[in-house]
Length: 127
View (cartoon, rainbow, N blue to C red):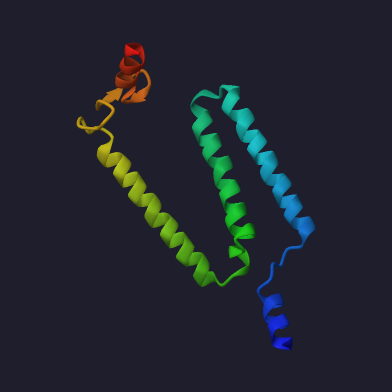
């Protein structure tokens, strides 16, 4: 029985409830900043700013809420390898199908709104 309590303590969270509340508040503030940035009209800086803020939130959640910071480095490398591989596949697929004329949205890159925007506008006008 004593070993069961020891195992639970060893695998418990190294953070106390007050620290979780502080982390939650920090994540809430970052989310509020993201919302403010999305309506601020930063132009070409909008997407990079939102990506950076989202990356910060991602790192905080993975490191602290998923306890990856407190685990073996092997788990961190396994997680990062999967994340990088998945990201590389996503980027490769987006690049592969970016100019595909057979896509469901009508194909081609439209100057005034991105991929398939003309098709969507035609469908809305047809209603």
